Image (cartoon, rainbow, N blue to C red):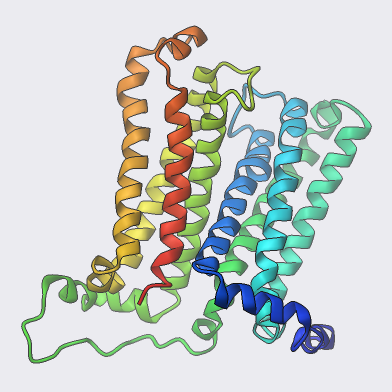
Length: 344
């Protein structure tokens, strides 16, 4: 690692910042998974602001939103999420500075993060200096190139964030693990753990890869759902009829949900028996079923009762309450997901 990072590690080791972070993480009940959840929810907001803005520039999402209006709308949400993630991430960095500042994956994440933020700031500044700057025909291709780079950078940030804890997978991949057997009759779920596929995922780079995709997809689910839920609550995008917003976002929500479910299943089979005895996993499953059921009910049932061209019909059926519960349920899913690794 560069000497600069080694110096930072030495600077924070034994400092009051390290002592304070360690006190919070070791003393406050449930603080580590809670602050990790806050961090992941911040990622979800970034996916719902910066990434969706880039997808809008590319013409892949939210065509009803003017680029200028959407840029103004997402700026405050992005900065709130960014500040939240700096604070929540700082607890872990200050608590274990050597682990982070001597980790090349963490350095890569910082490079991606700084580049992504600077690119977004450049986009915002030029937009503020001249209204409609990025909607002018001669600048559309530049905006699209910047959007592609921005998406790749944010994916790099998320990937680096998850791989920090898996550096050993890069340096010393196992490629094979010893199957578990004892003198007792092996249960079905232990047998699942001993499948060849389960062993390959558990012992190689596939596990952190699946977890990375899982976190990104889950953040995209929450980020897109938040747009619809906050609209139902009348807190944002009030100038766009909910049915229009719903039609434009639902395919991204269900697509990300399918990816998250598939990758989650891949991780589940590596520790199937243990997960089914983990109360956090059980809680996550229940909350996920409620959140997914609420989303499915709204999509398949309520949408048939609501005239998707009539904003007033949305209000008549009183669906605002479903937006509130949806936000609570998805936050609960994220929190339960982070608790899984903290219960042994």
